[in-house]
Image (cartoon, rainbow, N blue to C red; front, side):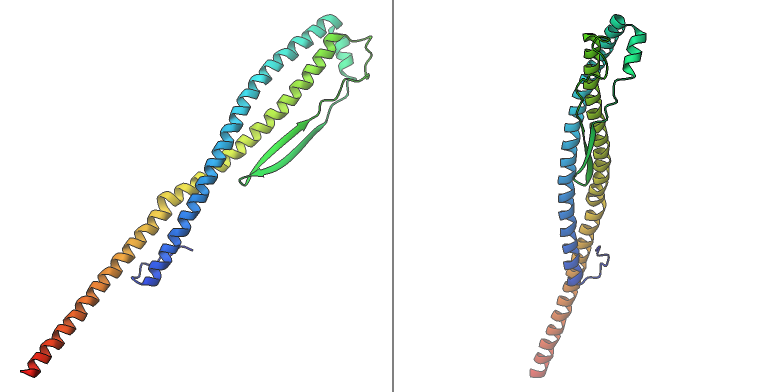
Length: 213
């Protein structure tokens, strides 16, 4: 709870110092969280960039393999056979959390080539094309996983940074200034009381001296 009163009391001074301690503790936790998020974000960016290069290379391989299959089998036959190759939906999505941020793990188990089409109607080029396409799907799913996680981490970093900036530049300086003000007022009040007490003592001494004389 923020302490707004600057009344020169020791209770307000203690409350303000306790509040400052809480703010500094919160800042430490948030700063560590931000650093962990940035570390995870940078790591995912590196993985994404490396995987993106692999995806581009795999796309070229898929393109080459399907061109070869089209040349060796004919476009009409390739189109007919592609219609009877079963759709592979062996995808699982696992959701987890890291520093209050949703991260995802997409798993893809490429199905093995089966006999849904006749080997007499296909050739090695077609099988290689299908295998390379499965490889591409696996990489694309992983790329989507990384992109989603990176975006979530980026949003959480911005949110955490906003809280850190608020503590560093607004709340903590305000509380420190409040402590300084209360301390100054208390010291001024104590000086005034000391001065009054001294005046009273001095007056009593003078009165005693006058009475004695």
